[in-house]
Length: 484
Ligand SMILES: Cc1cc2nc3c(=O)[nH]c(=O)nc-3n(C[C@H](O)[C@H](O)[C@H](O)COP(=O)(O)OP(=O)(O)OC[C@H]3O[C@@H](n4cnc5c(N)ncnc54)[C@H](O)[C@@H]3O)c2cc1C
Image 1 (cartoon, protein in one colour):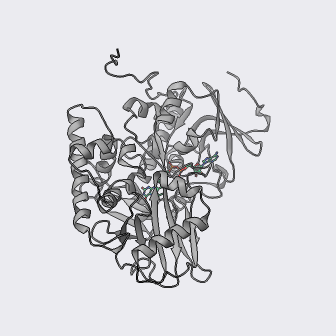
Image 2 (cartoon, protein in one colour):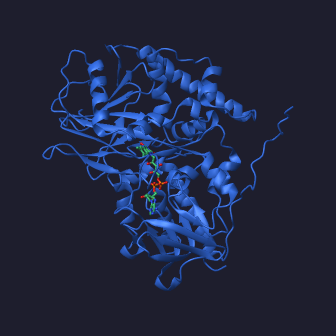
Image 3 (cartoon, helix red, strand yellow):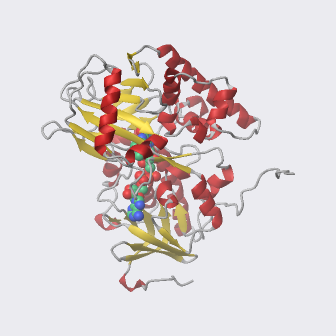
């Protein structure tokens, strides 16, 4: 089948085109390299590798620190005799500095009247979350249908009413999934948690380590790539606009007019990019693929950084703020701590979901004013100074990401998941955190997907033909609706 548009005369060619140079793309390249395939090309819009591993130089000129505006934690590390998070392996291999993040025992609680001890409610919400995941596991064993995590919470009798109870639940739930329990699958969110944090379910460990490396967390992929990647195997500052595909190959067009041909292609763009039609597929993707793409959710998680002349806040790693409005500037982290960036004056607050999208549409100045007024609620006896620096990344509006990571809604079925992952004609393959069944949303999900899909593409090349992944032309109910 001839390609629809351009002639191949101005083209570069490669056997495998890896579209995007984040974790999935770099690990896919390493996997091909290990299989003896060197004729591949990573095509990346930005000027470096790493994707959502994005750092930012923050602070006054003489007082700057590298902060992570994207992924920050290795989530789940390793258990002796059990599984190891490959992100933990990479961090250790490349001497990336991390520090133990004490999610549960280094917490100060506030509400809109100031400091307020509701650690008892906080601990209750930890237990509720554990029960939520246990009951989800029992549903899987009995083949019961999925529902939202809100339904799950209600069924186990956890019904937060007060701002303090809601803030505690937010910390357990929204702060991880970047969306509310209403918006999230009960079963899938439980297994993503267990396969990461529960060694008895094959998870790595229940620990989180925060990257504080001044080279940036992206070092895990950049240093890894420097061990195998030649300059001619990567194209930077190359924004892809069109992907034409057929049973005989793939042709990629760049914004600057260049055209590149490949026999195979691995698309690693975020789910948000695929949903938003930032890249046009020719022919349009089949209906089963489009339905899968549009049925998963791209969530947003935003960290808002402040540098202040003095440290006037809590001396724990975390603080929780209960506003009357759920999800309004709730989770605070201090970096001005021993073992972190002591003396930095850096404090940041995280918001998620719809609230993230809301602040992306506002000017920085308004968001700053809102947060300063929250700080005045939290510290009524302190004159809050003007910040020296202020920054947040707008992930949802960025055409290279369109959000921070995927989240599995209750209306996303197993067949949708397989369709999201499935290749087309054995030529167009898809990989990234969003194609991971067990670890959607996580760095290690992107890692394992890059590894798996590149292994399949290497088999196509070395094995003399492709074995396509299964897909479903239609996703159907087990039993039809009887209406009327
Ligand atoms: C704010 C935030 C916090 C997070 N926190 C954590 C955490 O603490 N721990 C954790 O495990 N995970 C975390 N994650 C998730 C983690 O970052 C992702 O799961 C992972 O980085 C995704 O890797 P990927 O390779 O699938 O996609 P990406 O990193 O998005 O890679 C895709 C690449 O494609 C490029 N691209 C996009 N469009 C085009 C185009 N048109 N042309 C060319 N190139 C293009 C992009 O620039 C990008 O480099 C976080 C993410 C965010 C945003």
